[in-house]
Image (tube, rainbow, N blue to C red; front, side, top):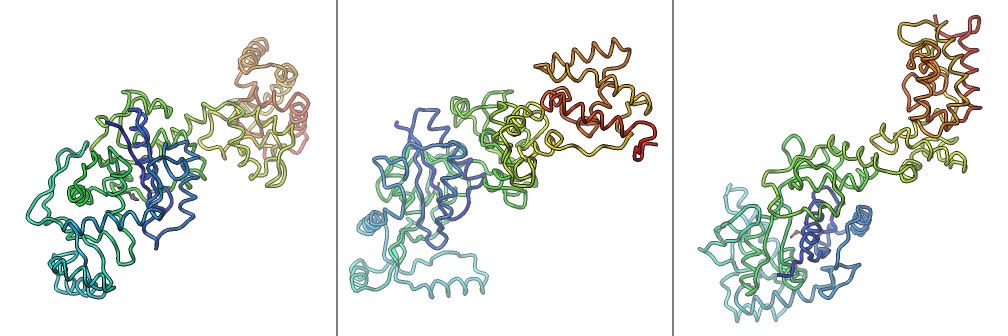
Length: 501
Ligand code: GLU
């Protein structure tokens, strides 16, 4: 069987986690079996349509790096892939069902349907949907009225008293009584526009879709679709309804749980690799004990058998963990390009918005190894590295003093550390610098940690900072010595040492 799957978004909202998960699973499924992934824009709902959502769609997926084989932008022989460009086709197929007595013209005006709804609500009737009033109008009369220009819709004639069965790859065999299916739903509206059901089924057939993998919220539409396939005399595709994605309160994932739109995650600094990796795990498992996957590895290991029936719970902490992992995998240059916009915005190189000079940019790139293990989001790099680009405020004297020590000793230690600076600034790696510090500390009979404490406070303005040797290397001996000298004079007896004592 030729494997052809599709992602069929409606441009009526921004792309969110659930949609991307559906797209991703279809993509992985197609890749895992050498099949084709098709993109189809289901833009039949013109009232909720917005061009912005189409743009958001393309933008999101190109950022995520998910591509399709056929689609509005990729072309293909089953196009056009935008439903609004296929309206004639839907009309033709709706009329075919009328011809075959599997669908009928309905002349009920909107007001009647609204009245029906209101009456049922008032009498608390359990009945919903259309009351099939036009179902039994004779063919002749119906043709005449339609030909005479009377407004009408086309409704599917659901066979009553029967059941509809289909197999879902995840949920198993499913059987619905036809009487429980939405009674005779509209296929073609009075303005000639198709409904989702008609366009979706016609297109899945014409585009030769082999597997329909979609969110579980569409499960209740599937019996109807299966009835339509039978009415047309077409073979239905195989169905797989994906498990729901919930927030940690057990409710369907939405805004109230935090970000749900991909745009928001992107703005917050999540990397596409982290999102893909995490979303791919929402309802599926791959290799036991392995957490990190490239898109290729996911595709190589994806299979319908490894989908979970239970709803997936979206865990923001876990996603953040993935972000941290992917940040750690970036080279200095890659990470710098990710972190630079936030640093510029945060005014790391002067006033907010000021771009770095060549030298500053080089220093920023060189500083990436200092923060790679310490940030969850690119925007956090700027604050962590501010001391490299602007003289830090001198901390309180107490900050310079190692544990169980005093100011006098701190001053001595800083004096000792000062002597090490030219060598520290010249080392190529942290490893060499650390060995050197250890040896020098031993030679002078002090603890390496004690030697570093006042030096760190003088150079970075804090007791806690990114690696000191690396910082000194980037700052250079001259600037480092200036900072030490300033600290020495600030801390020396007689100087105004703030709240030192
Ligand atoms: N256009 C529908 C949606 O927005 C597609 C549902 C389906 O995959 O059949 O999700």
